[in-house]
Image (cartoon, rainbow, N blue to C red; front, top):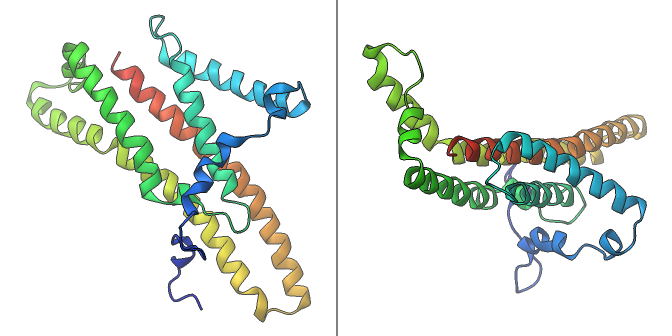
Amino acid sequence: MMTNLFSSFDPSSISSFSLNWMSSMLMLSLPSIFWLIPSRWNLLWMNLISTMHKEFKILIKSSTNKGGTLLFTSLFTFIMMNNFLGLFPYIFTSSSHMVFTLALSLPMWISFMIFGWINNTTHMLAHLVPQSAPSLLLPFLVIIETTSNLIRPGTLAIRLTANMIAGHLLLTLLGNSGASLNTSLLSIMIIIQMLLLILESAVAMIQAYVFSILMTLYSSEVN
C-alpha cells in the first residue's frame, strides 16, 4: 500500500544490492548496430546528433572553442536517454531526482564560472551591470544579477526534476484508480494514459533539449 503520493519515486530494490541508479548507465551499452551498420536507426540518430551540433555551434559563437559542441551533444543524449528509460515499466527514473540533475548542472556551472572569472574577469564584471542603466540602480542591479546567476544550477535541476515528476505522477494516479473502474471507464482511462505516454515521450526530449541549450547559453556568456 502506497503511504505517500511521491513514494513511487523513492529508490527501492528487491535485492541486497541496490541497482536503481544503474538505469542511468544503460545508455552507455547501446547495441553495436547503432554505429557498426548504417541502418535506419543509425541514420536517424546521426541526423539528430548533426542537428544538435548545428544548434550548439550557433549558440557558442566561438571559433577557438572547437569541439565544444561535443560536450553539450553528449549531455543532451545522456539526459534524453535517461528520460526515455524512465517511461518503461520497472525502470528507475533517475532524472526525476535532484541528486541526478544537480550532479549535472552544478559542476558544469561552477566550471564555467571559474573559467570566466579567471580568463575574462572584465567581461564578467561588466555582465553584472546592464548597458544604459541608471547610476542610482547600479547597486541593486548588481545584487539582482548576482542572485540570478547563483540560482541558475538550481533552476536547471528543479526544471528537469519537476517536469519528469509531473507526468509520471499523473500516470501513477490514473493507474492506481484503474482497479475501481468499470470496463467502459477503464477503456477511456487506457486511451488517456496512452496519450499521456506520447506526451511524456515528447517532454523527455524537450526537457533534455532545454537543459542542454540553457547550459550552452551559460557557457557562451563567459567567453
